[in-house]
Every structure is written in C-alpha cells, then in structure tokens.
Image 1 (cartoon, rainbow, N blue to C red):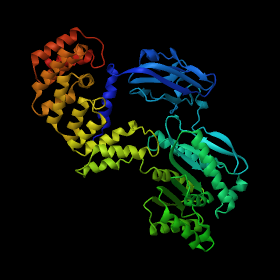
Image 2 (cartoon, rainbow, N blue to C red; image 1 turned 30 degrees about the horizontal axis):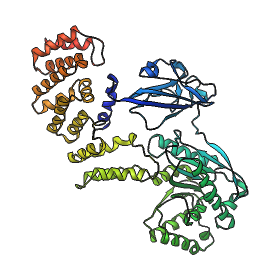
Image 3 (tube, helix red, strand yellow; image 1 turned 90 degrees about the vertical axis):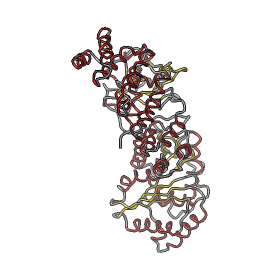
Image 4 (cartoon, one colour; image 1 turned 120 degrees about the vertical axis):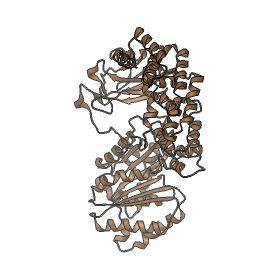
Length: 562
C-alpha cells in the first residue's frame, strides 16, 4: 500500500519555499518551563519575529521562577527552537540531541506550552523520569493527613479535560512510575490520550487493613476516602474528563472488585493485576460468586474490567482469575467489557508484563480506526457519520480530542478503499474550503489511489482556471513531474505544456521557476522544442539563486537540447 504521508506532507514541506497565504491575525502565546531559576530562554525560528534563526535575538519574558513566556504575531507555518542564547545550548525537550524543530502549521487554539528538561551543554541534568507532585490531604474520613502523588501530562492545559488514572499502593513508587511512564510514552506517540495519574499512598503497616479483601469496616472506610475525598479533590483541582480508571495489584486488585460492585462507583475501568478471591481460598466460592452475579445482573454503567494472572504466581491467584472469567462468561452483561490475560511471570513482575496490555484494553475504543475500515466492504458507508462517532468516542476520554497527529491514518484507510465517492465524502466533510486538501492534493490522491487519470486532470484544470496559489506551489516545486506524467499517460502532453504557460503568464513571482520547468519538460519530452530552448536561454540569462534548480541543472539541460 502506498503511504499517504508523502502526499499529506508534500504541501507542508514545499511551503518552506515561499510564504503561505495563511497569516496569523492574532498574537500566539508560547510558554516554557525551565529546569533552573536563572535560565534565560530565547526563541529562534524561520521568520523576523522569531529572530530569523539568530539564537540571541528574541528572549522570552520571565513570568515566574520556572516559567518564561512570549506572545508573537506569527506567519504560519512557524518553525522554531529554544536556546539560552547560542546554538551550543539548545533546549532538551524530548530528545537528548538533534532536537527537531517545532512546527505550528496554523494558529493554535490555545497557548503553546513546552517543558524544557535541560540544555545540550548540561546534559547531565536531564532526567527521563516524570515529575510528580506530592500532596497531603487532610482526611476527615481517616482522621489523618494522607499523601497522594499527582503526575500531570507534560503539556498539561487547563482548557483540556484529561482522563484520571488512580493507582493504589503508591508507596511503592515502582507501581506508580510504570503506570505514569507507560501512559506518558504511549501518549507521546499519540496512541493513548494524555492522562492525569494519581497515586494513593498507603502506609505499608496499614495496607491489609485498608485494602481490606474481606471488605469489612476498614475496607468501607478506605472506599469512602477514595470516592469522597481523593476523587473529589482531583476533580476539583485538576482538569479531568468523566473517564476514570483504577489500577491495583495483589490485595489492591481484589479490593478493586469490591469498589466495582458499589452503586456510587466513580470509575469506568478497573485494572486488577494478580487477582485473588478470598472466599475461594476459604472454600466458599458461592459467597463472592453471588456478589459478582448480582453486579452483572443489575449493572447499567459501561465498565471495562481487565485481569492479569500469572502461571507462576500463587496457585490460588491463578485459579481465581479463571473463576472470575467463567462467572462473567456465564453471566454476560453488555455493559461490562472484560478481558483476562495470562502471563508466564511471577507475582511482582506480572505488573511490568501486563501494564501495556491493560491500558491498550482500557483505551481499546480510543481512536477506533475500524470505524473507517468498513468503507472497504460497506457500500452504504457514510464518512460524516463515521467521523462524528469517532470524535464522540474519543471525547469520552479527552476533551477536546486533537486529531491532527492521526488524521493521516484515516486518509490512508479511505484512499485504500479505492472508492472515489467515499474519498469525495471525506474531502467535503473535512475540507470544504480546500485549506488542507488543496486541488493539487486531491488530484494526486485520486491518481495514486483510484488510478483515475481523467478525474485527476479535472482538478488540475481547476488549478489553471482558479490560479489557486498553494496548488501552484505544489506544481512548481515538484518540477511539475506528477502533474505532467498524469497528462502524458492519457496523451495530453501538449495540453499540460499549454497549461504551464498559462500559469507562467499569471504568476510573475514564479517566472524563473516556471520557465525552467517548461524548458526541462519540453527538452526531456521532445515537446515544443523551440519554445523550450527560448525559455532555457531566458533562465540562463536571468538566473539567480533559488531552491528549485542551480547552474548545474541548466548545464545538463543545455547538453540535452544539443
């Protein structure tokens, strides 16, 4: 399957050859956090307001000890980096070296935020571990101060509502770290939504009392602490979506299913690593089985329930996982989505083996591209309905959902359906104003994936008639290769050449480049030879440095004409 990326990115990459028609009408605010109080931060980029790549020209303002900010009028796309005033001290944000330029394709809907981990001349200060806040709650229910850990997304923004993932046994930072790091890394690849991770600290000596696997008075009290104080504190003080999950291991896993049975349960998902059923261990499975059946019979709340078991864990824990699976299979509830996975591991390392699988299950309908796959087989497929459902499902987790990083996958799926009407549905819904999929993009997509040369030519003819600027740039700076090959394939080389001359007459800004393109196409294809030679002479006479061709290219064409 041909990759869609070359088609989606060509417009962006070629835009660097000239200014786009989209200009920022309002100031864009960029804020960074810094690792040291004394750090002065400069922004450096591809336009005058970004210093024209001079690293000590545009300094951010200090707004707090560890934050710097600047508001700029930018032309888009804007391309930039951060330094401390010279190229030896580039900001480390997500790579230790060769940090890629940041690119804003269009004006962002909110302030841009970047967390500077360190500087390239101070690499020893960089840490791969995520920061988290340690907060003490004054618990009226427990009648004591209790710690919770809060790990925020790297790009945390109060205008975005994030899922909240709660982790018991957070006194063991390995549990808390593997959850927060897994979510952080996967969200960096845009596979999961960015999440707020909350660790519930438990005093090791009180653990068995609070994670009360018989769910007596201590267990109920700790439940009230979680439901009424921890969850409410997080919702009040952080920007959370409605989606919440809780992660527990060992006794924490068993305690979790009692929380799931509660009528006022605030969680949408439960991750239980190394489950156990104390009633099964005591030879009385029917007691807990009845509780499960009552829950499965009455529950109307959508819940995801993941269990991880290990073959080399305590035998009773392995058996308990099997028993729970059987109970749920025999008492199905359409609102309970269940998965049980078995691993070859021990009791503790089961966490590391299963944590990624657990969250892949929890977020299984996040970015569900299968909604578009049915376009291949369903002749009644409606792109608008599929896309609206896709957004709706994603916004259960994070609101608003940012689809920019994954939009290419949807386009890939739709194009590979080889259905022109479906592709046109996508164009009409996503881009009625031709801002993303301009006329050139549409023509090349139709040609490459539908193999419909004549339909592609219709779009090219619209470019000639409308003189649409971004499409003309695509033609010019690709040296009209794809454009001409499509016309040539259906025997319309002369029409293609004539069209390029029309563009030449209408676009004085591309006079040099279009004359070179006409000379090259004509001489290499034995087309309008005298005209092409004339254009080549004019190019040689008026040559100036440009990003399309150089003097060596001219010499090659001169040899070709002879």
